Amino acid sequence: MSINYHLLLVLNVTVNIRPKYLMNPRKFQKERKHKLNSEVRFPLVRIVGDGEPVVMSSFEASKLAQSEGKDLILINESQNPPIVKIEDYNKFLYDLEKAQKLKQKATLKVELKEIQLSCEIAINDLQTKARKAREFIEAGDKVRCVVQMKGRQKSMPERGSNVLERFFDMLVDVCQHEDFPKYDGNKWSMTLRQKKVK
Image (spheres, rainbow, N blue to C red):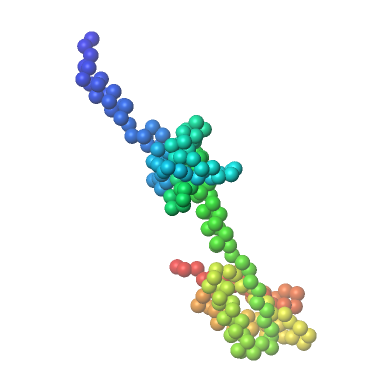
């Protein structure tokens, strides 16, 4: 049986010149934004991590990272000396992404603000309260409006409902009902939230 040595040579070269991202797809699944390992070249670097920061040459730091089976990651090149970290790069990216998501979630946290109204509230006071509620709603918070019915007002509950309707009309351009006005325990209440953008 004859062997085509030329074909074997081509196949061997093809197998051995696969790009690195095919050999280890997880390592190169995202475009790198940090310099790693031998790309980090400075006379001195400051290694940060769990313990006290340590200053050494980037060559020594790279050797240390290699001995631990981790990566030397450049964190901040503008510092003197530059800041680096010894960690598995995939884990570093995962922790970084997780921290960003938590930060984003914290900034998007919605609070419930309460505004007290009354049946006898004057129109200018109602407008002032509406301006405050508008600030809350435009900031992404929810607003709970409460009208407490006192004394003889309890015999005319529709007055409390009318106050809430007027209040809502002042804000209708920026909000919608989370909870519609309801009467419970001698008080009217409704919750407003930011209007969804269509």
